[in-house]
Length: 172
Image 1: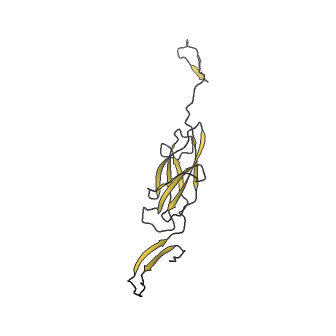
Image 2 (image 1 turned 180 degrees about the vertical axis):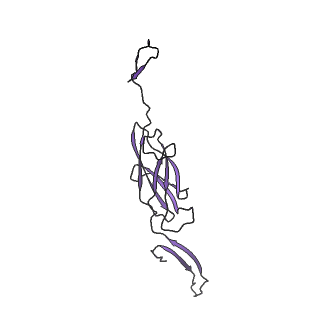
Image 3 (image 1 turned 30 degrees about the vertical axis):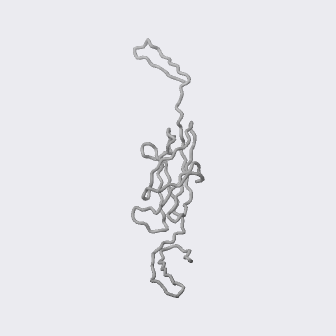
């Protein structure tokens, strides 16, 4: 059986002919041939207040990610992105990670755990896949993680406690 390699909606008709030459009635089915990858997804790392986490380090290695995606090659019902699966990887190359079901409309929120550290930069990358198995390009985002609390190693207090309003200086 030969199918067109061009993208689009097509009608396929099938019938059977037996060895005596009797031909069955035909059955028809509409199909959509999709050979195009989904559009490059969008990726943002969200801080605890709902903003984008890029101004200051996060103190939690469990990242909250917001991924937006659509499969521009097909016409989809309103609210349906055409995306089938998403993969989140550590690092910027989209290598590693496991494919998981896309549960969002045009946007999906999910959590991803990265390594903890003392003011270290972490990068995550994302790809999406449509129902035909076409995979998007890779997009990455970077965030600074600081999960190590400060430690006071020296404390000195100085001041004159004979004044009516004493002043104190605290230094390290």
